[in-house]
Image (cartoon, rainbow, N blue to C red; front, side):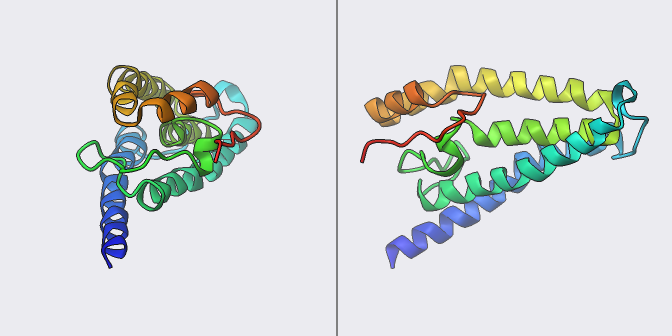
Length: 172
């Protein structure tokens, strides 16, 4: 019974954090900046709209899967106040160490391209830089402290931002 309760709490906590963090960063702020109004395509390239739509369609399920994986595999949430009990290395984490952040930035850049909103390109770059600094100066040291050699092995095999072409398979 305790495992079911733990998972339910982790799923609810992850869902709440999904709305609070990525919902604001990749939803509310882009809306404030752009009103989600269409402008002429960036650089006059209509194909950019298609690329933007594709980024959104790929990033959204990656983000959702990563949040669910934190609850089910990690038995916790992405929120620093309720971290996982287990290191999460499955799913999208087999390709890139930070699929949530990559997905959030991809959602923002996808909106920029789809809507033709240069302000969202600048915002996406600022959001990525903020996430990068958070990862380097807080998250990675904390994960190394919490998970030691397991995290170091994961870090050695899986890139931080640009996904691997083939999934990493941790030793059993």
